[in-house]
Image (cartoon, rainbow, N blue to C red):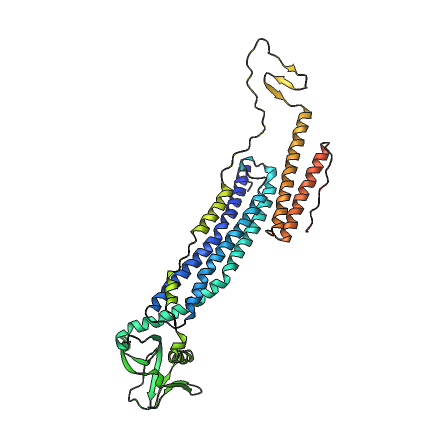
Length: 419
């Protein structure tokens, strides 16, 4: 499908706009990360206030993630400014879309390609900044979900468990079968094994369709030692001076029983000592409004309305009938005059063309200086630097060749090299 000149210009303008609008990407990434971080903080604080105080390093990790946001904000803004500088350098000759002409389109497309490459690098950079914080946050989210899993079982069976004021919940493990005991005369049953920092509690499951639960037994946790027996169908047993109690379950659940039994027995070593940590975490606030404002302003600075450059056009005035001036007259400076309308001679047209190419050359030289500045400020890579310098020098070669054809002495193009 053949595109009209206005359609092509609109397409190029749209491509420029889409690339520049990507500068807000860094803010959007941080916004989503901040939302997840605050949600996780709220859930953890809720669980802490209900006695789930094990895994004490979570506060420290979340606190560091809040601080990391401040650092990442500054880096995202700085990188966005670098991209903005590149955009301004690329569009230095094409700031007025109304003045674009078809012979500008290839150069504009090249500029868009370079801007797009820098914008994609900016997106990759923003993702990399958040890669490690995201990984740490995911780890905390996983642990909070696990605590919440235990919390739901303790809440469901709160009356049966009847926690003491100073007693702390540790874990609830469903799908465990009580096999038997050397000192308890209780039938084997399936249910939920619960640990607090003081007790081992087994809640028995009854019924098939309409399930109900009854507390089967409980014992002080610290009076038992935990062990394993069996080679094929393994069991976990808790042994005390009174005797032992045995439980069977799938391998992963048996491992969880051992893990949580040890955690419960050594709860003081694996729980928060300073409750002020949770209070400090709860009071932390972070805002991204300033970053959004800065990035929005940077985008708007590119899209700001520009005054259309006046074009040098000769507008003929309608002749006014006059008895003394009705015919063509030849002027001394070789201009053809009809009333106030003047037609330029060949020499004047040549001078205008020379002026155009000199103006174009000046713009390229300014762009060359801008690229040099970007390189010395380490805002573009060596590969990008050489690519742009090569392109500009090629344009300058064509311009000097054109000026030479018009009788203007050719000027030497200085080849820029990496210092």
